[in-house]
Amino acid sequence: MDFSWTDEQSTLHEQALEFARARLRGRDDDDDRSFARATWRALGDFGALGACLPRAHGGLGLDALTTARVVEGLGHGARELGLVFSACAHLLACAVPVAEHGSAQLQREVLPALASGEQIGANAITEAGAGSDVFSLRTTARRDGDDYVLDGAKSYVTNGPVADQLLVYASTNPAHGYLGISAFLVDARQAGVTRGEPFHKTGLGSSPICPVYLRDVRVPGYRRLGAEGGGAAIFQRSMAWERACLFAAFVGAMARDLELCLEHARGRQQFRKPIGRHQAVAHRLADMKLRLEGARLLLYRACWRLDRGELAALDISLAKLAVSEAAVQSGLDVIRLHGGLGYMSETGLDNGLRDALGSLIFSGTSEIQRDLIARGLGL
Amino acid sequence: MQTINHTPALSSTTADRFLEPLSRFIIREFLHGDASLTPETPLLEWGVIDSMTIIDVIVFISEQLGVRVPDEEIRPDNFATLRALSRMLAALDDAARVRGAA
Ligand SMILES: Cc1cc2nc3c(=O)[nH]c(=O)nc-3n(C[C@H](O)[C@H](O)[C@H](O)COP(=O)(O)OP(=O)(O)OC[C@H]3O[C@@H](n4cnc5c(N)ncnc54)[C@H](O)[C@@H]3O)c2cc1C
Image (tube, rainbow over all chains, first blue to last red; front, side):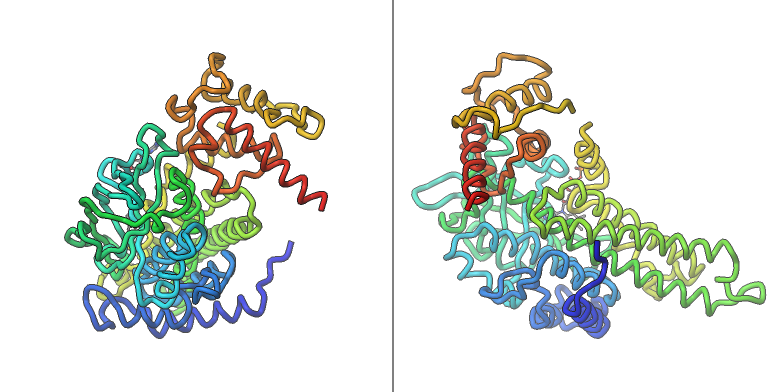
């Protein structure tokens, strides 16, 4: 077993950290209040938007482990995770499925633009009646000649307000249930696609999200991913990528939380000594370190297994659960350890907790991850 | 989960060689012992295969039958009936043996 990073992985991580410190400074720094488009393009120039896409299509061709290391750097350096979250949703839940399952024509048409950031991708599966029970979705895709006609409503689409390409999951055969679902890459400018009002979220403020409605949307056959009825497996695979790599951003955020807390614990004096010298505070920091390293190891082992082509579902669920629960705890620790300062929004010290709360829910809630783990145990 | 002592290399080499262990597994795990399942029972219409059970089936196939099912093979025609599933596994297994022998 070798826990060391290669030179390439270390360099990419350092570069991602520097990039994020310089450019991912939260909503207030960018040109457009609704979406930081200039920063998005900079993420594309840096390579993050196509990190694990094939080089032939403009990506960096990285494996899951290295992609996650880059994402950890971005999460570590960012003051707020919204844009990193958007970038990961774009890459892992839209572009990667196209690279893995799209037709050659579709790949040529969209992957270079997605890798560069010229186009923005999104993933649309959740519906009002299909959240955790996501495969009970009601959106339909009816075959009509060489095309499909899509009808339905998707409730939460990250990047929805700005997306050019929507990876939409719809039922091509309701009688087949799980294996009746197919995946389509829908051009968001297509007639019949409309977007609802963007939601205001508790955290991840620079990542836009809205509902998307599809009414008689005609999609050419070459825009179907994989076989008819293969959509659920494509979605599961995209969730494996997302749970493994996106959550590295929260590992990075926990590393940043720990740095912030250590600095404060050394500098802030109460009762004539630094607060870090009070054992209760020191133990809190020790626990933060323990949670960070435990979550990090689980996450990188999951990525490693994904890269080896192994059935990594159990490891991936363990990692997702550990990282998201640890990130929430870490966000709370930041607030507790900074006292009153931690609770004042002006300091931005509440960002970590706000961002981490969402991680308990998207990519499958903590309860669903526990269900998957229990199943992996044969229960 | 009870281990099925099935070694593909020693069993018949027909396209249906995985039928019996698959059938036993599905009857035991998802049909509570109801043995009315036949090789032609429509598994999808019966609701036997859903988002959770499919994971169990794939893990069983991988760990007990030693066959890896790639994502692109997880399609309705391959999971429509026990016979279709068994034939897909036989084809994947044969292809892996040819690769192994090369
Ligand atoms: C920030 C954010 C971004 C998102 N982005 C996208 C996106 O880009 N595309 C997309 O399609 N969706 C997206 N989603 C939606 C997300 O995937 C769903 O919110 C999530 O799957 C949960 O579904 P739900 O909200 O309907 O909650 P529900 O499924 O209604 O769950 C409510 C509660 O019930 C629990 N519960 C449900 N079923 C069970 C069970 N069987 N056992 C135990 N507990 C259970 C849940 O764990 C949860 O605590 C996003 C969500 C968030 C918060």
